[in-house]
Length: 171
Image (tube, rainbow, N blue to C red; front, side, top):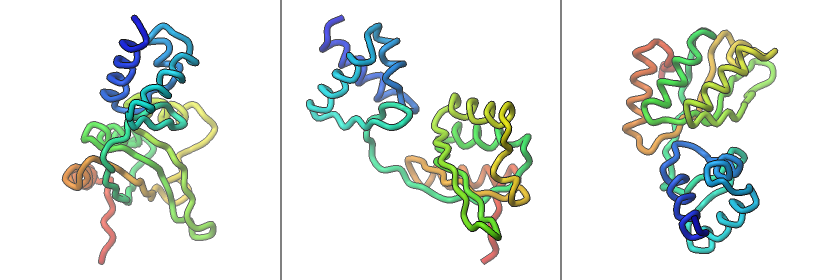
């Protein structure tokens, strides 16, 4: 495969990916070095492709996603159900945060964009020394959830409410 064909395939892989693709994974897929991928990405950017480098890999700049903060409550055993449902419905979980009475807002950027991200996050909670952030506030926590439309966010909120996870503050 020549460089033009490889770059076309790299762009296609990034475009069709549900989350960031790392330079290492692209290099492995294309059977080239990571440095070749870096040069290919630079060439693709010069051609006008809006490729963004993130800490998790390359993504294609797409129209802005809408976001909403959802207040949630559930047990540790339901973390997976919450995350997988949001992903399956077209959402992404950008962060988790709590409002602590002493320390104020405590936030962790978790960037759950794919099932693999969710699997790794859940595995780190189950096999690590830390417990979910929600446990410092009696299981109440917030997620910033993004999606391609308000309709998707509405459907996610409805499903979270149906499952008993969504907390609607009284107005």
